[in-house]
Image (spheres, one colour):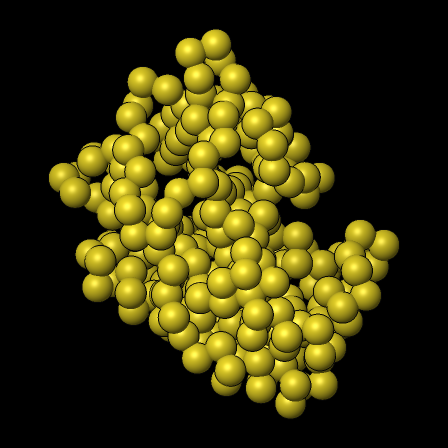
Amino acid sequence: MSSDRRIALFADLHSNLEAFDACLEHAQEQGATEFVFLGDLVGYNADPVAVIEKVAELVDKNKAVALMGNHDEAVFKDHSTRMNAHAWAAIQWTRNQLSDQHVSFLKELPLIHKDEDICYVHSSASKPENWSYVDSGLAAWHCAEAAGTTYTFVGHVHDSTVYYQSSVGKLVRFHPHPGEPVPISRHRRWVSVTGSMGQPRDGNPAAGYALFQPDEESITFHRVDYDHYKAAEKVHKAGLPDELANRLLTGK
């Protein structure tokens, strides 16, 4: 590995262009040179085309890796029984915005990607096609066991969390504070839930992403203010459910 490698982790962008632009700029200011998109590029919000094209451009330039999320899969596969009414309405709207090329890009995204001792996946590394949530120590343990790596980074859960392996092998939950580096040494296993860029749900409307520094053995979770009023107004103008706009305004 090169010295001072900095990897920006973006999860659950959900067609939120304003959040994406703000987080990408912030990550670059923090010295990020690699970008990993942990799935759910689309869904919920009003800019699927712009978000897909920006991600595809970074992937084409070999600056980024992108993974498939369940909302991305729902664009070309029936998830009507697996999503609530608002989520499914947004997917149906999204389908009408995308060209065949956009859909092909989503179809070709891998479910999981490994880079040396690092695993990236949208849901759990344990049967990622099932879209299960890493929302407990046990779920994190199953994820880490399946990954077989020291570090596993996931999305899907819209709230940042770190799970670390205790002395007895269990994975224990830790809630990081934004902007404070978390030491994640290689002598134990870690599963980090990035939090959501495009639709936070922890009561804070600021967009979230994480910056991983493998050589420093640390991860920092950032919250970035952006024009969430503009993003919400776009949701209204698109005719998407009001609930989706309200979530951007409240972060809930």
